[in-house]
Length: 146
Image (cartoon, rainbow, N blue to C red):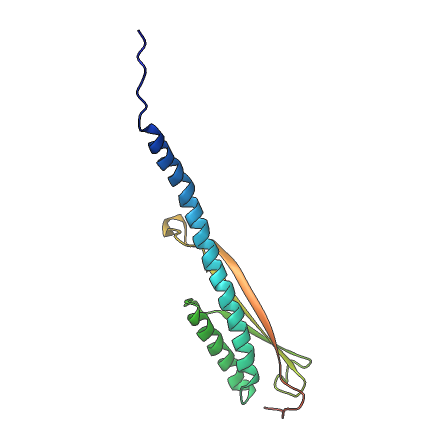
């Protein structure tokens, strides 16, 4: 006499376990992608703001401080509290950024730390580097600033 085992209701249990096994990694990947995209938007806005702030500064000394402040403000607008690295390059003469005909390139770099990584796995959390650059012309018909 063979006894058939009753399997009523086991399909739903298997579906729930399978859904959990698939959904948890998917949600984590989505969180990482959204954080990286937000940082990408933030660095792009920060580079544009830093370039514009540098070009509109009254002198070269305050221009660097204004560029860093504008980049931080643009990052904060996107909800990122990290302090970005702002690199300013000037062409054609790096010593005279605020001279007629020069072009100021502002580059903003930051690292996006992967979400939900416990510190028990190490002090160095995995991260993705994000950077953006923006070129702002000073203008040919403007007066030279110190």
